[in-house]
Amino acid sequence: MPIKILMVCLGNICRSPLAEGILASKLPSDKFLVDSAGTGSWHIGRAPDDRSIATAKKNGLNIANQQGRQFQQSDFDAFDYIFVMDNHNYNDVIHLAQNETQKQKVQLILDAIFPNENVDVPDPYYGVANGFDMVYEMLDEACEVIAQRLITKHS
Ligand code: 4NP
Image (cartoon, rainbow, N blue to C red; front, side, top):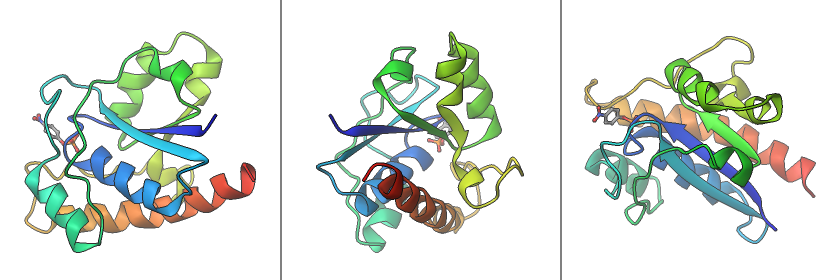
């Protein structure tokens, strides 16, 4: 059974698809499975935002075949680790948890590089033009740390 990691944002079209692609690229696929979901339901079944696809492509990653889906309560048991992009996502996901074990699976993704500072990955959807590049850089740094930790812990 692979170790399963879920990336969560609001829409599952901008940040978490990038996070999924980046972390998956840093982990051996025979041991780890990375997926993503949104707390909202607007973009179910859709491909990631064109700007996320383009930013990933620029960095050698193909995320175009991902399909948006909504976070669901069963994800708490289906996944070993749940990384959320911002404090809003954290509260929404924690609200759905039914016990401490489930709550403990949920972490802010930027805690990997800014521990205990509650730093958000900003939502680039309505943001500045280079917002997607900024998001990519933050996620790449955090995922590098997370990947090394996961590989060490599960080898
Ligand atoms: P994401 O960005 O949470 O990074 O996927 C968003 C994309 C779409 C919307 C909100 C956030 N939206 O409201 O449609």
